[in-house]
Image (cartoon, rainbow, N blue to C red; front, side, top):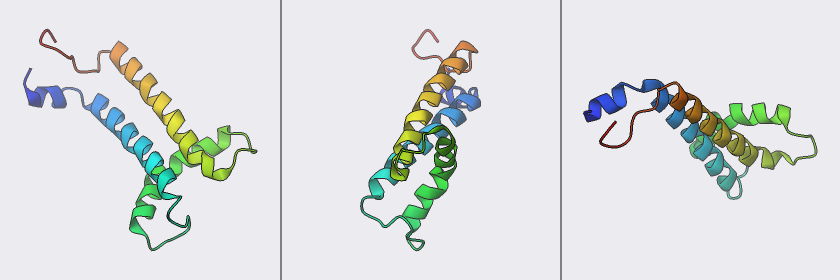
Length: 106
């Protein structure tokens, strides 16, 4: 299998896997950056990028998380759930044959 076939024959896998990875690591970055940047600083383009990438996940987690959890902890909780969604998505795609083969026998 050539390199182009490795990437082009499995677009669903790559889009879902890397899309979730981007959001997960953006949640981690947003949580870490929150210690150094005031949370409502509209002029900081890096902060705005992290918020734009992760806010949908934080809003979704807000609905399933108990109210006694502090708001700043919603971001790492969102990363936690997204990681588990990524693992389940991988297993489902693997079962359906949507994951590229690894190794020479592929």
